[in-house]
Image 1 (cartoon, rainbow, N blue to C red):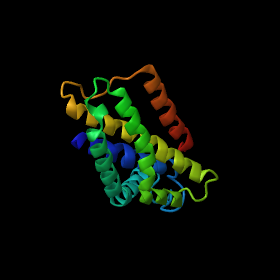
Image 2 (image 1 turned 90 degrees about the vertical axis):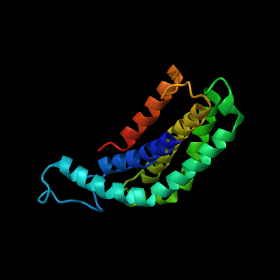
Image 3 (image 1 turned 30 degrees about the horizontal axis):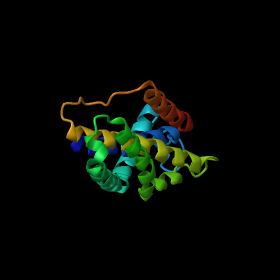
Image 4 (image 1 turned 60 degrees about the vertical axis):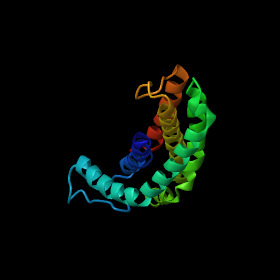
Length: 177
């Protein structure tokens, strides 16, 4: 169960914070002047640290609560004891994408994207991709709790790998500097 919570914090809080920081490293608010910190990598690290603390306090508790709810539902689902993990992981991914919108403090990222033309679309895509990824990870952990002989990672199909690559690649395009 610890892996489900840790995965949700990393995939649902830390990675979106890094993407937002990467996209807005030299933008307002929290802009660090070039004269104070001359290297962009250092400005990124400073801004990421500030945003990570804000995200951990604001979004972290919601992510943990939503993870607990989804994990409990998936562990009680009959698919968690089935011989194939794929239906449970897909169901959890869909629910994760939907549940992610309940973590309302994440919408505060719009503050950093306020001057952007497609800010709302970026946030929706961020919620959907990270929510689906977190949900799939939580579904895998629920399945693995009943199948202790399974490894750390689920089996990937080519379709799963392409879906993950396209989703996360799309986020990198949307949040590129």
